[in-house]
Length: 84
Image 1 (cartoon, rainbow, N blue to C red):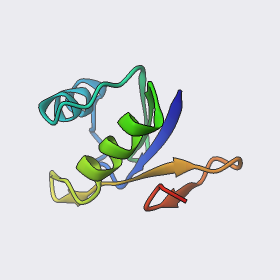
Image 2 (image 1 turned 30 degrees about the horizontal axis):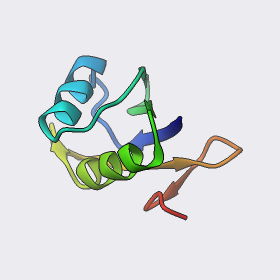
Image 3 (image 1 turned 30 degrees about the vertical axis):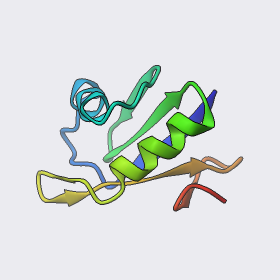
Image 4 (image 1 turned 135 degrees about the horizontal axis):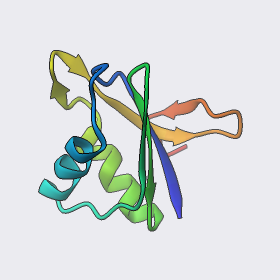
């Protein structure tokens, strides 16, 4: 399982909206944890799904905010671009 960090989300971002966006692009994902402050963690079943999610989420515009997705490092901060 691969965990993704998604940042720069609108303050009112919701789990169902992220899931719908991913499903529209054919990306399968597991649990999505949306946190206050405009960020979320998404569990993907494998690295291929994680890479696809990163490609689809980077630069998506939602409520005038630009989303950025990446793979969190051990300290919980995302490596931008996500494929380190």
